[in-house]
Length: 207
Image (cartoon, rainbow, N blue to C red):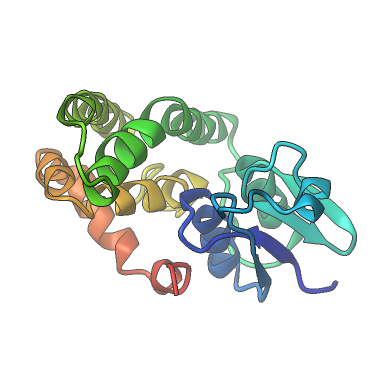
């Protein structure tokens, strides 16, 4: 097998999810920078890898993929290394539920409405931040209700249900409001401390 290629920017939450999965599997890969926010626009060549111009995209021995969930599952199933998906149907369904909930309800509120608004705007929209924090609180409460006993979301096994939220929450806690809200959920805060301490989390961060 050749070395897989990840296309995207190291600041991207979803690129980092894929890089976390590769790191946990112990897979060497190449990161090809693609800045979809560049002033000159999305590179024309990149649209051959992702027709909607989003990141990440992925290539392995001529096989191309886009969409983070599809890439993460392919990497887990196509390469040697620790299994990152539960084998039992209910555990697998719960993993997919957690990932789907994060994508639908947590990512935009935590990352864009709170962290990006607070960190990158000269005049942050306080109403947008307040609404984002409200939605983020509901997402964290839901995560707490879905978490199984044990160190990880599904119990003793580290899975994609842990690697998917890690970069999202990592961005969220860059701001004081995110740190304070996370502290209200001790089980999720303890989980965050564990995942953030893993070598894969440091290895997958921005340069």
